[in-house]
Length: 294
Image (cartoon, rainbow, N blue to C red; front, top):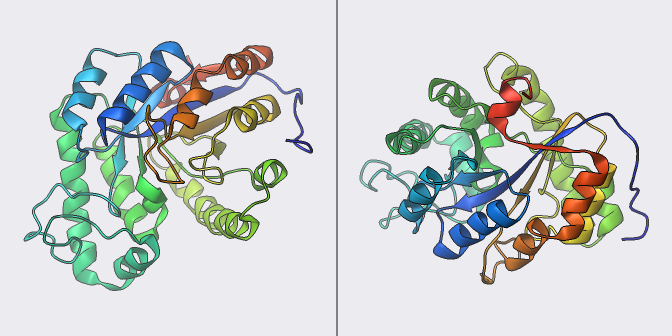
């Protein structure tokens, strides 16, 4: 961790600590609950077609302190609508392809796919609303919501269904490279592409009743949100608002990008909690930020 600057002074700041993929599996649900009850997790993003989504919804209903948002899935997961209704999006089993690059290009150039995306995304918002949970925020699996076609569809839906926050994945490239220079080329490419898109989108979001944080940490360390890195992030924060997102699970999944027990260990780490206390950080949620931080 040498070279990572820490302990820089700054005024009072607020941080959302979020877990992605709630509802995807029982192991993820259990990790989210543990990280919220025993650790510093404040919110989670729900996959409405996850294998354990019913359990996740029941858990959320009896845990009102956990803010729950919608984790849109348009790649690498199952759709809500039947395959016959969205044949340009999914296979015969109702699954989206796993390759985000190929899927992204398809969404750019297929008018039929764009129409079907609007139907499927509306169906995912509808399913979330049917459970009666307050909609904290919106983000997506593999950050596909920052795809221009999907972002155009997402903004009015998020507003219509009452989302209070939206993730614009603006990570800190310098800190990520100071901590871990492996895959530097990939990290630099992601930082440039997402940075340009998010800069463009930030102005558009201002016209909607949703908040975005100044920074989002997790893109460049996806599945590798180790204790030392997160502690460095928390001690180095110099923006008024930030989101740190994780992929916790109570057992390994074999996916290098998560979910994994390492992210869970970070969320319940005494060192991470101490860093929060030392900096005087306010742990918060998107609905609280939307109310002016009260």
